[in-house]
Each structure stands twice: as structure tokens, then as C-alpha cells.
Length: 240
Image 1 (cartoon, rainbow, N blue to C red):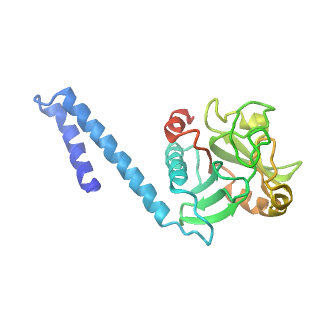
Image 2: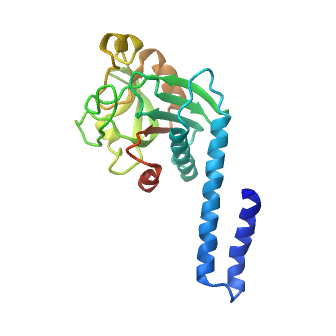
């Protein structure tokens, strides 16, 4: 039904200039209606992608979280800010003891990885609760990132990240917020400490998965760190 209505609305809009009986109010109503239809179309597309995801025997992310990430992915791809059809989603609403990072190939709709991931030491204990864009805060930053280049750092192979939201995560590169492997991101650490280890603000991942994950997501793919304290409406305004 959506696809039948939408072209009709476009024709209606194009005809406004030819018909003197059409008022600006009618035109505004038609534009709003098209916007609503476009929104429904995007939401239907996202739900379709979600429902056809190949889980690869991994647990799926929540639909709401995936939806926000995919909306941002589409926007960034349209603007040419990201280039790969790879989406990395981190859900910081979940316990750090849960596998809350997903790497998804949107060309094949397949989940490639589902992993543990650490948040910053000042962001919370088991659960992430407070976030910062400031140097030396030792807190995680939320929002959308473009992945950068791999380099060799103190944690071995690491992946630079560029925050795409002014005042939210745009200091990521300056802060040295990168994706790297860490021994404290492991099931054994959880067993010994009742929670995952924490970083200085980096999304640290298990050492044994680091090389594989960063090779897949490097060089202009989309990374989204979600928390319910922020909504996509905010993200949409803040993306660079």
C-alpha cells in the first residue's frame, strides 16, 4: 500500500504549481504526508532486514537497538561518510557480562561476530550509566563512529575510531579511544570478579577476536554505541 500511495503524493506535489486552487496549506499537508510515508517505508525496511538476519547461531540484538543503528547507517552511507556495508553495534544498556557487541554484514544480512565488550572504568561497574567526551574522563562515549586505520599500540593491533557527533564523541581520536584487545575482556575475568573488566574509555574486546574483528570493520565502516539515555532523534541532529 505504501508504494502505491507514495508516487501519487509526488504527482500531487508536482501539480501544485499548475493549479491556482491549491493552497500552501494543502501543499504543507501533502509534504507532511510524504514524510510520514517515507518514515513508514524506512521502518518497514528495517524490520524486514531484522527479520531476515542470519543469526549464525548468535543471539540477535534487540530490534529497537538495531533499528536506531540501521537508521544512522543509512544516513551515513547516503552522505558518503561510511563506505562499507558493515555495521558494528554495541548495546550499553546490557550487562557487561553479556555479549553486547555485534558485527553485521548488511550485504548478506549475516551476524559475523557477537562478543563481549568493555566500557570505561568511570562509566560504571557491571552496567554502563554515565558517558563523556572529555579527555582523561576514563568514560565511554555514545553515538555513531566511522572506523579508521589499524595501528600497533600498547595493546597490539588496534583500530582508530572517529566520532561523528559534535560534543558527544568527536574527541575520540584525540582521546585515543580505539578498539583493542584486552585480557580483562574474558569469561574468566567475569568468573573471578563477577563483572567484566573496564577500559579507559575504549570499546575493548577479547584478545582472541581482536585481529579478526578489526580486519573486518576497518576503513570507514559504521560503529554505533547505544544507550537508552539517548534517542535517534538526538543522533540525527548531531551527526556531522
